[in-house]
Image (tube, rainbow, N blue to C red; front, top):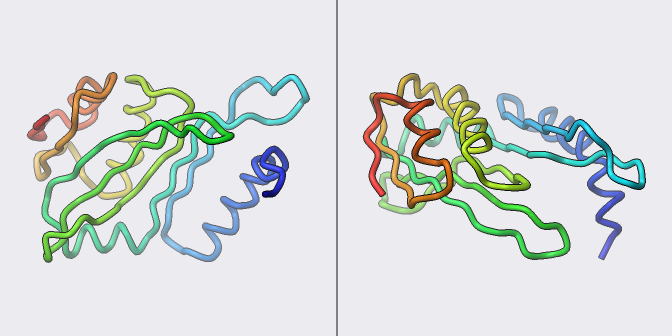
Length: 152
């Protein structure tokens, strides 16, 4: 296994390569204002949505999305938030994901605001959101997508 601290320090290089090799994709890296005790940059959140996934959703998926999160329990702690849809074959279709430190209304709102722009979802009147009762998710969804249907 490699040195995860050194690899995380290259996250901005990864972002640049990802965007160069996948035109139209979105990759947002948000760094913390303060550095760690060893002077290294710390990642606040990391969002990825590949252009092919955007196009696939817009051209062939049903107009509802599922949002969920899970804990990352390996050497690097945090949470993984994901957005999935159902394609024409009724199969799960991954759209985008983000790695964050902690799940709260602010991180869900940040995630959904970028998602809204990526998928041209506007006020949410053309989509239905399905989720569980994640911390802050429902409130953030109602703020970002005031016209969407939301089921838990």
